[in-house]
Length: 319
Image (tube, rainbow, N blue to C red; front, side):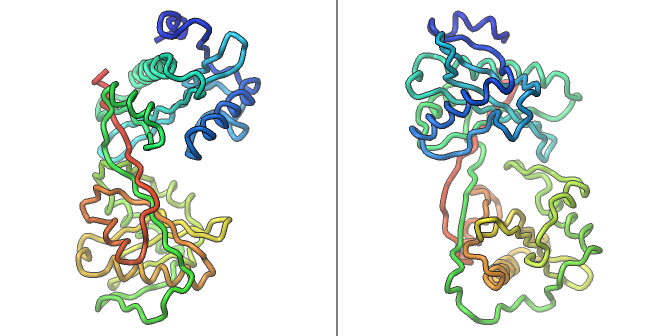
């Protein structure tokens, strides 16, 4: 849908145009601030000073009042997930004072049309879906998405564990398993275990090459890697954060070692490692629909749920 077609889609007094570069950043940031003030603090991607301000952003649409003031914008990210799925994550916002006038609906239709056009250039095969994230604090956005056919595909669950006063005591591993410090020679096996653990997942997992894995490696002294002889049974990857907390982006238990108490043991060991490193709070995210009931596992280890975040999807061919 070309930008010039918008005349009949939104009320008079609003112009739609493509992002113009650095001159738009202040206006975009002002919109973001107004939306956060009304809806709360949440991730709202778009152009800012961390992105090349003068670059070409063909998926960033600007909604502008006749006064010249920016009142809304869109953004799109895309990636490939497991099972050869291309995801186009569509996001955008409209200032509260300008809502319920058809602006958000028009911007979403334009985003879908641009994504379909872009998707036509990818190799044949696999499937493509639109993605959108919306919370309970955004009822208008939720109504818009569901009316356009978006449905919950999975639910991201954020969890945290306060490490102050963590009880002492030996945390034994199942017989035959040992924990070893991470060495450079271990990384190919660690990467392989993580990829095998999540292979085929349809819940937002993005496969990583070994080179991509290596680019993310940090803080290996607070990882927990458990071995069964020469094979890795379980991996917990942890990363220190600037605020004194730690994030756990990867927890992988080999198929042969599941439902044998390994997951719970390595998570408890991980918490001890983090506490001894002076970490105040451990955080991780998982998926509610995980077939291995990961939420329950982390709750047994002492984590509590801090947020439920439904992830909405719609097949591209549904448009």
